[in-house]
Image 1 (cartoon, one colour):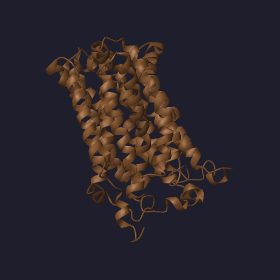
Image 2 (cartoon, rainbow, N blue to C red):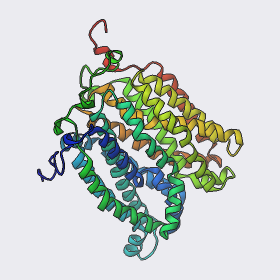
Image 3 (cartoon, one colour):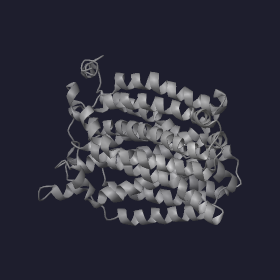
Image 4 (cartoon, rainbow, N blue to C red):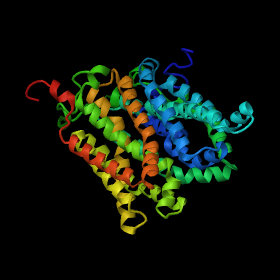
Length: 443
């Protein structure tokens, strides 16, 4: 096993004619795309088929999704230490294999119910769906995403924002187009079950091999240096861009920036999950065809891509709170446009607002924690962030369903999310990098 995962097997990263960190960027990007089946965007298109196959209501499936996702989120912090000990390569292979098995399981849930009970029964379908959602969310949105994002943080410092932006572009295209693409995949595969089985086999036989071949935990184990040994320019030698001390998890959790910035990112997941999960229902309430809404969501990538590069450039030159002001403003703007669809002006605001908000998401999730808290406990700290993200994303579909059940539509859910975005916008104005307080006097 030790020889199998030797950093120089099956090739030496230090022998590449260019910095291997850029291969890591490509690998992390691919792995994020591979995690799509465990993301909300990868689950939403399957919702109508699951409701029909299991004979349950939308609220029932939302609750199962919430419980399974919250359970996975609460479990993630225990994995942070494992990531720090095992490294990205072993963890990536393990997550790929586990996600493949999880997808096979969830593709057979209705058949398992029939085999055990002889008929469709709510009391058996619910716990099995909870288990299925727990597994795909834990290994997909949780573990594989943590590995992919944090590996970039270990290989880059000065160019971390640029690397994250480059990685974020194809991820943004895939995630914003996922609802539309997966609806086609289901049709082309001959059904929802076949689509999930196909993705499971891909994870099991291709993604696991890919992670073993490409992933490396850090440059030092490969005989390389972070950023290829290039030092920061004088403009960046200040407390905002220098790690004076590595924070432990308890120390990070006691800082306001951790909670404000984590929850600001979580609002993205909360809203995005709810929209993705209920997209077909929301489209009907808005008087739109489901594929028309999927297409509109995909159009946000036109704003997403340039914003990703702008934010990547900004993170290398400015305080991160300015980037968080942009993402929270974009979220509020996008939600206001969304609730007024299908008006033409609302489409423009929706695409612009969510394009901005989703364009900052990946970069900030990658850059913030190594910048603010150092690399030594990065896996542990990042797992706490991802845990919050997973838990809050689980609450999104249920919250939207509850508002719809109480009022007859999703209007109150939109307004509550807008108020939350405005609240985080105000809070972000006062947030600063904790490392600044540790800088020597006069810097």
